Amino acid sequence: MTLLEPTLDHMVYPVPLRSQANRQPQRLILDKGYDSDPLRQRLAERGIEMICPHRSNRSRAPIQDGRKLRRYRRRWKMERTFAWLGNCRRLVVRYEREVTLYSAFLNLACLMIVLKRL
Image 1 (cartoon, rainbow, N blue to C red):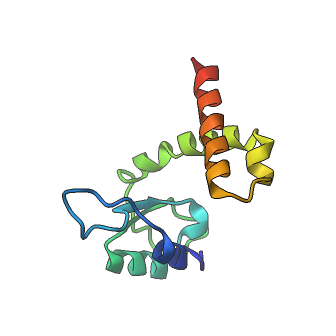
Image 2 (image 1 turned 90 degrees about the vertical axis):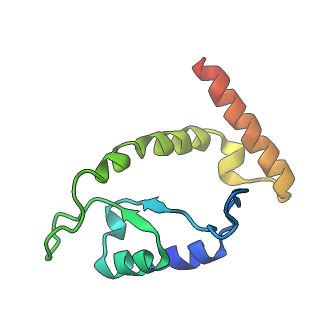
């Protein structure tokens, strides 16, 4: 949780052609480990909506209603994709030092996943 904001500061986002000013995500879908009111407030000041389920031992009343958590239910698709990429040992261990080679193997792994699913 402490590295979330420095990570957001150092990320490079694709800039849409229409609006050059919007260089940050509109919302973040996170797991229960990120449930913190101060973090929600800091992200809201940045203009980022935080979507994550509340912890079961939360002392304060829940802030977020169930409508926004519908987006969280679809998070499994990304987790499943990461699991499929985790089956490629060359990507997990990262033998390549060059970013271009690693990117090429990542694209190849994605192609193999898509072809396997067809």
